Length: 449
Image (tube, rainbow, N blue to C red):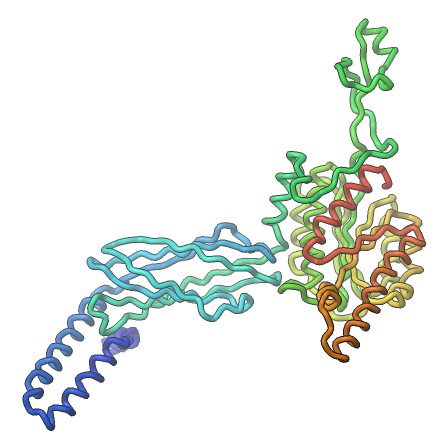
């Protein structure tokens, strides 16, 4: 019995209105010492306040479960780096109108400390509210309690109701962006988001079928033997060569922990790799993924089966940097021993200086002799902003000179790779997916694999 009463008392919270009424009554009682005519009205107001307080408490506390709330996510998982919408449902069991403040205990990763929804609910009404979360790291996101602060029209006290709703959502690499690219790739509308159309050079096709000639077919593909047998003009039909092996190789060393607009370079690379593998799968190539640092962290072999993308997503879900120096010798050894068929390797990494590249160049050159290697590295956008600013002091001139040196070295990296016949993509983090996908489609169109 005492435990139940104590639980009810713990839910009671005085409101600002109650404090203001008490403050005003105290002032009136103080004035009543000099002006006795105020004593009777002050005493009457005190009793009215006490009666209103008791009535307010009875109205709010008579229900064991006065309100309820629950969360409904738009997707079963969170998409890293994207805006994710969640819906919060709230239902009132009171027979009168109430005011309510809703405070959801959001996961600590999103760092939102001022989340609050204030609204009114009519008698027995249910409402839902949408709010957005933008996660910036992969992993498990645990939601806490839903705190509801309920007030009646009297608003002397409020009832604090805690809804125990243990709720966990896993944050995966950006699958929202993945679906956008999927729909555009299926409908051949990738040009709508900046994917370039590339004129085909050479011939990288395979025979598919013999069909009847229709206007517009290339007369060079006429099959004269089939034409003689069918007594009708027949042509050979070719399609783009498929089942090519495409690996997204992700550097997970310390250089990939550099942040940009909330996401690390590693997260940008993982999101881009997932999109490229998905488009490759739609194009009927065989996508795969490799993560490496000072050792091979994970590998998903190339395949075009139906669950290949799910295996890639699971491999990338918990991929994290170990803050160690990257070993390209380990990568070369693994590629030489495990990848026996000529493949396209899209290497997501970052080099800040030419010397850093030259230390690894011998391994990159050896890999490029066996496979088509594309080195994808990042432009330092902060340097770009610093170069665009007008210096106003000697120190700022010094800073801009150093920035020009680093920017020059970044461009030298591209020339250094080109000198040894290694393809490269130099891009800003926000344009990584578009530029890397452009390079993949370019290589596929020109039959370089």
